[in-house]
Length: 289
Ligand code: NDP
Image (tube, rainbow, N blue to C red; front, side):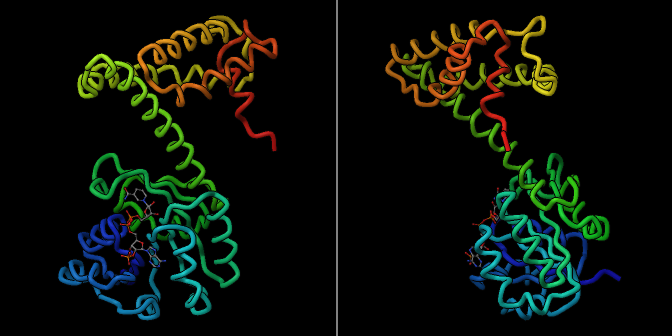
């Protein structure tokens, strides 16, 4: 028999997760701070809980998909003492430290805690390309795989509850800086009247092709050997960045996004590493904890 699954938070993402549960004919309980958001799913057969206490009254897994770390405490602190022995899957975006704090907090109440990070938008949930990262309780991950796999490809990153979030935010760091670079390029060609739409047709295949070099870059970083054969030198990269920065200035485009990239390379050259490979900037970025 499948136990009830409780969903706390029926925003765009929480609604998509709960919908997938209903689509799989699982008994589903829904709660949302603003009540009207539960109506659509109640109409499809979900149990509409009017309070958090009511929502968590059963014995099934509890799925939280709220705004942020603070809202998880706002919702669950008042009922935590009643949740001993229950499993909480928290899919709210948090930092790794916040996820670890929640794992410690949950352990204090005897709650089995699995942290999750969603690498998809709501429309993708349950469809191709949807991936979710998990870390924290291994037992919770194994016991609830049938539920987790409804939403997308499930990957478990170990018992440190912060790891799913760390992977999530590391990937988003790459995505946000890539989009900033795309906007920089669009502003550069846009200064001569070229549309961003036209630029995108060139940028997408070029940047996709560039990702092919991630593996060789990663091998250099992992070996921390920046003096090997065939690496693009810091001096070469500075020369390219000098040209990109100057072209932006000449076209009247901001260099705010380029400046930190340029500075990292220039600092490495000033420190005497000019002939070494450009991946050496990683040495300035990596954690020294
Ligand atoms: P929404 O803004 O659509 O929904 C936010 C939800 O959190 C609502 O249910 C809202 O309730 C609730 N909420 C906010 N603050 C509180 C509080 N203090 N107490 C109780 N409930 C609260 O966001 P999403 O559903 O899109 O996102 C939810 C989580 O999923 C976020 O952490 C987000 O980062 C993550 N996520 C979202 C993705 C997306 O593409 N949307 C992608 C990947 C992750 P109310 O309706 O009452 O305001």
